[in-house]
Each structure stands twice: as structure tokens, then as C-alpha cells.
Image (cartoon, rainbow, N blue to C red; front, side):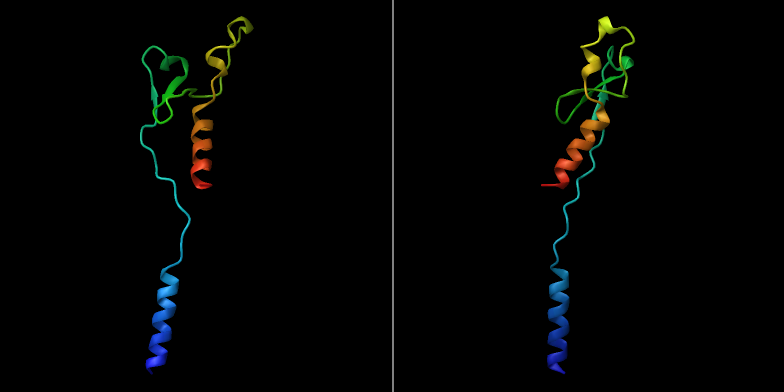
Length: 88
């Protein structure tokens, strides 16, 4: 009887010690619109300090391209960081 209980206790101990994958913690209010700039579809990533586009837009006038329209989208920054956190 003692052997059965010892085996059961050992099994529970081993099952309870399984390691699990780390889960990325949710980040609250990561992307902040900036007064005067946010109305144009641009935000600041408060984690990386990087500017990003709030949606995938571009200028209609080619003469204006090469500035803010070259920024990555906020969702791409978020997804890249999430993948990096999960692969650590």
C-alpha cells in the first residue's frame, strides 16, 4: 500500500513540475496619439519610443512621400515585439 501511495505522490510531483511556455504580458495604452500629429494617423509607441502609423496610409502626392508615410504601422511594431517575446 505504501508503494502505491509513493508512486502516486511521485507521479503528481513530476506532473506538477512541468514547465510551461512564457506568455507575453498585455501592455496597456502602448500607442498614444499625439496632439497635432495624431489627427494625421500617427502615434507614439510608448514602449520603444518609435513613431508609427495608426493605419496603412500613404500620401496621394508623390512629392510629399518619404516622410511620415515611411513609418511602420503600429500593429506591425506590436506584432514584431510579441513574436520576439514568445521566441525568447
